[in-house]
Length: 347
Ligand code: NAD
Ligand code: ZN
Image (cartoon, rainbow, N blue to C red; front, side, top):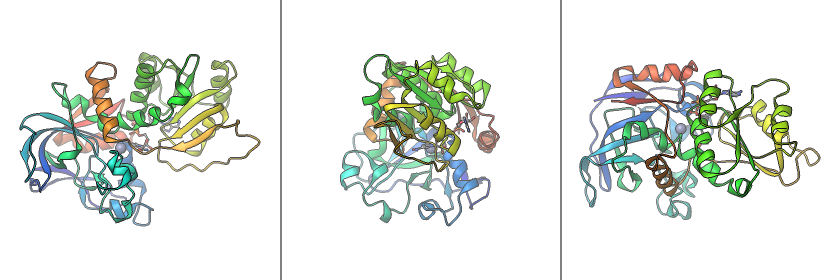
């Protein structure tokens, strides 16, 4: 079968012919419906090297794609209650499965992560940019009769903002609240949609690209362009009080600094983008009780919620579909900043 392989650090992926995998005990083989191209993959093949802190989980060679959906093709030993042909989202993180964090479905924060051989599907272990994928049966979240190709981004570009928003609910509950979304790509666009669907907050959004801002406006956000007076303009929109919950889907120093300049007292900044920007913090300039935190992906249960939001018509990934032969173009377009919403490879 064809697969998009991460072959070495600082090396653009390759489309290769590899053997179709077979499911082991407790696993399932799925025919891939869709695999989203996430910006984290660009970090893996373009920015990281063997010295990066998490490189030992992510070293080559394997099939990329950690944001996947598919139809069940074959059940591994001991798997019951699942049926060939049914459509599922695949929860990508894989923890030890038996620690406190994994027990609540939060494999992302596995207590035994240091002993794991990989972070998840498409992250050290073969992912979904291929015709078939093997996943643990526990990681499947049912899609019912929803379109699994369009749904594929929910597994990361949906799940990650959902978890970030859910952990900021104290800031977003009640009337008259403000949210800010920085970075309106795959994650940010779904973040805007979820904030509109789940909270009464006024959603302010920003990106460097005009088409990304236009898409966010269509989904109900008020947009503010970048520039030296950006923070002042955002604060003005909040009547001077500041933003209750900021979501930074970029994470460079300048975006986190804007977040710090606009956050309200008792507000919360969640850095989701992995660019690693370092900022300063001091008692006198931090608004009282304003929090600065980060989140990583989400829980299995969160993914059930995200699938329900999609099936209820409350969120809808805006996707560009690439056939398997054009899978590398999906990553090239992402690198070049040419993707609006999410690029999905549908083999
Ligand atoms: P994307 O490429 O689809 O979107 C990024 C958007 O940010 C683009 O629209 C781009 O124009 C915009 N942007 C870039 N620099 C900007 C700046 N300085 N100011 C304003 N806008 C800017 O990326 P994505 O797949 O949505 O991922 C977003 C980030 O989240 C990446 O860093 C990715 O690695 C990370 N990520 C984190 C997690 C997590 O669990 N924490 C999960 C998935 C992705
Ligand atoms: Zn991702």
